[in-house]
Length: 424
Image (cartoon, rainbow, N blue to C red; front, side, top):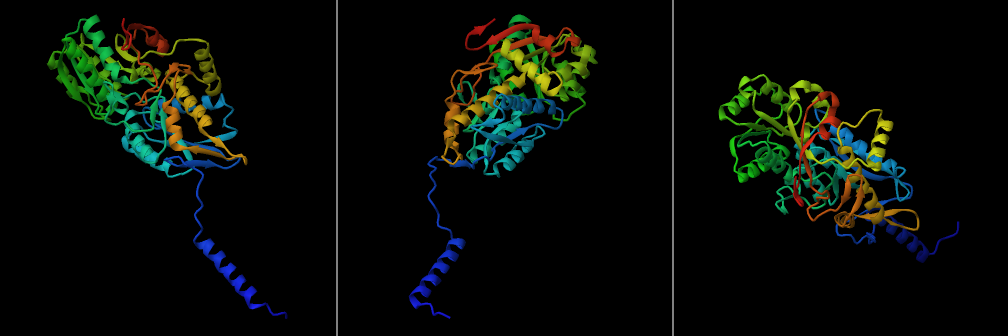
């Protein structure tokens, strides 16, 4: 056997040792990513992962499902791809609970492949999910959240605002004032009772109503709360009756809103009390379940998109794809939120010669914040520094004929409030 010279043998040993060292302690290669929050790199042909956090169980599951469908329709318009890469939706359920929002977000951000988050349905979920999202350096956009606490109140940063959070549903900072103005100026109501459920959404609307109503000269006779899950509304309604309120404003979700309405209709002392709720009950399932009990009720909610060719075409696509009518009009806001996100991802993604994509997390946030005059189906969208992208405009509606459903209710506009251009 031929003897190997010592200098060669030593070199071989050194090379072997170096190989082992590299395997155990790899040399850190400097990443080409210079984004302050880091980059997500998608290999050639691999999908772009988007986290989806919605309420898919419980009483508001129908709204969460509608949000997911709006996202799916936006994907359909792009052939299911962004920059040639398929999109993989990582869907998590919150159950419309704050802890559900936090847990869902934690599961989403644990996957470093996720580039952004679409959601949530409920504003309480958004507050907790957005905090997790921000700390993970991601961006999040919703087509359904509307609580003022998430973005801005009075032109200032709201308590639950988080960097990287955006929404295409209008800030309901102006919903309570719209209802209060109609009650005081048009109905001549001078005293009102207000009931919320402690959620940041319902509490925000309740406080907005109270502030504007009292500013106009009205008197709040009761400002109270029920708990989520409460079915017995008799005690709180007895307090409303004892307060002598001419109007009861109750921005509640189902089923608490259903329980309160039915209980109020059974109380002779409230026979002449004006009943008013908000957009959470502008829903086909509520109208169908309540029937004649809801006749004469008032509702305040965002002005729906103008019924133009694009809106009608999207509704036809919804019916064709899912075999049923959309339960509300928020699928349009979801479509717009998803469209902004998908288009912005396409703009920010840097494509390498091998077909891989690199998406900077801060670059995505900055690009979303620069959204100006985006041609959405709900109208032109411009995102302000707090993440609000929709122009606020609210209608007060009166239910006359339950058989006409949501379409009949939304068509019966009795008052419109647009804070940036005055009111009607």
